[in-house]
Image (tube, each protein chain N blue to C red):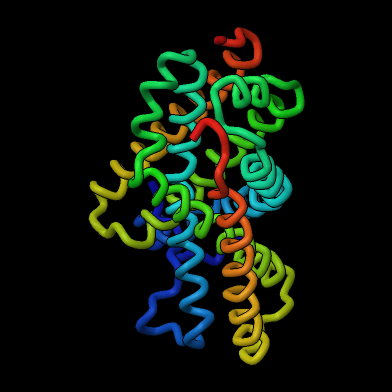
Length: 130
Length: 128
């Protein structure tokens, strides 16, 4: 296997503070969403195995640690969605100036917080069957 | 014309030659996941109830089952590509790196297979 290109090393690559932070956070959120995908597949598989298997799985799926995972997935999804759009805009060559990327970093953080709070509030409202 | 030196060629240095494909597929799946991800989030949070019957009849619907299948495949692919880059950047031991990459690939294929099978079983078999 030939060596594949790596991301610029932090020691020799100077990026503005918030761009670096938001870009790293996008990776972390993406890795978190991989865990979310695992949870989604576990949930679907439990449902596919029938009502009794699902009732057993609900001891795990309805537990407090699981709720913490759902909250984390909602936060990670909100962030990864907004920050991902920013990366797609960057891919077109736009918004790469230092001042622009500093400004868009704040837009991303603010939009992600709003999206996470709205969907979290809506997701965790009282619903039958929880 | 190749600008690679003969010594570099022998040592196998230089780019892997497939970085653009990785980059492109990551972006392609990202764009596809924008509407799919928003659809899944909105659907999940607006479900009126979360009991077994409601969930199974929602997942078993033609639209949901189709879009969920596409979502699982696309998200698994995107996740594999994303984790691959993270592993390549942060795992420096060559043996551990290769093992992690292979393992991650296997896990993602199994994950996708479980997910798609579960959706299809619910859609076709309605396990009530």
